[in-house]
Image 1 (cartoon, rainbow, N blue to C red):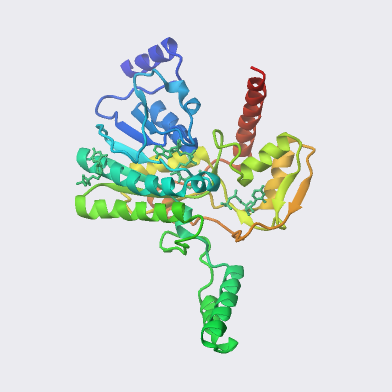
Image 2: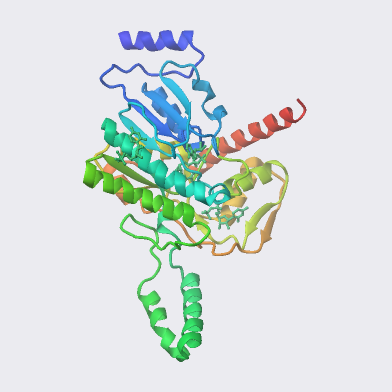
Length: 382
Ligand code: NAD
Ligand code: UDP
Ligand code: UDP
């Protein structure tokens, strides 16, 4: 009863969202790196509302103060402008390590910085975890699986190999049949499970992110084995929701903005390629369950419900009640034809699975984007 009265007192006297009262023994000091970003700010909301003490560390590269401003001044909340590439000395019980640009234009903008953030930044957070005995959860990504060997890729690789063989040692085209048979015997891993080691180009334009996250995972397990640091690794698949970046060129934000502004919805290729998107609140619940579980090996967090891109376009158009038409543009280069997580491990070991229906998540995101467009329009004239 005393706890309920305290919660009520707080909600009457303060301008903040309602916060549960936790006794000192249950209340944790939690650090969220990248906490002013899209996912991090929703995680901040959940952990604050659950009654914990939250410290957000962010350098505001892609995040913004506005995402967490509703907590500023709260006695359980602290916001530190800090770059994780520099050492950090604070006292905490848990670390959610999310700091890293996540969308391709953002992480390709300064690949060296992306590498430093994912390597030196992760090393610093593991050093901190080791010193204070905190548990660290790494926000890894489905990109560690890289480009799966789809049939188009396999055929492309075979053609390249044929060229090489005939150019380099004058061998006949038939000697290139070997790799083709190998591809036939080892088709694409789809959906991807945690046992798959991935297929990543170490020198391609995405390598700063993909390989950065792969080495971040390696560091976690080195600190676990050598130093006894408790680690958790979430491999996150495509996620959407409010506070995602408006202009990062990804399909959900593109289609919603285009539909809201009456512009054509740009479908690359035939639109038959598929993706599976999870709503951000599902991801946040998954991250918290994983952190508080005893599962130290990597776990996929994503929504396995697969849709074609054309279905996405039609659904968003109808939810926005937009008169935009659908425009078919040339297919994007190396565009994976299918991506879908295998989440059996999360289901079995965490009892977690996504619960927010796609339409409900899209409606919330559409509301957010239309408020943002209004906000932008109003600010233009100030
Ligand atoms: P985001 O860009 O919105 O958030 C990243 C946050 O990290 C930003 O607030 C940014 O300012 C901060 N940051 C970047 N470099 C930093 C540094 N050197 N020091 C301190 N702060 C720094 O991206 P997001 O979508 O919220 O992604 C969060 C995490 O989840 C990332 O690690 C990302 O790799 C991972 N992830 C996201 C998705 C997705 O679909 N959104 C998918 C897979 C993995
Ligand atoms: N570190 C940090 N905060 C701490 C402890 C360590 O940022 O509270 C950094 C430290 O600067 C170092 C990194 O984490 O660069 C790895 O720390 P560790 O103790 O493993 O390595 P060492 O300091 O022995 O090189
Ligand atoms: N896509 C599209 N129109 C757009 C943006 C993306 O048809 O305006 C397609 C893209 O070719 C890909 C899918 O949507 O097949 C998902 O693209 P996104 O960049 O969102 O994510 P990723 O490819 O990394 O899964």
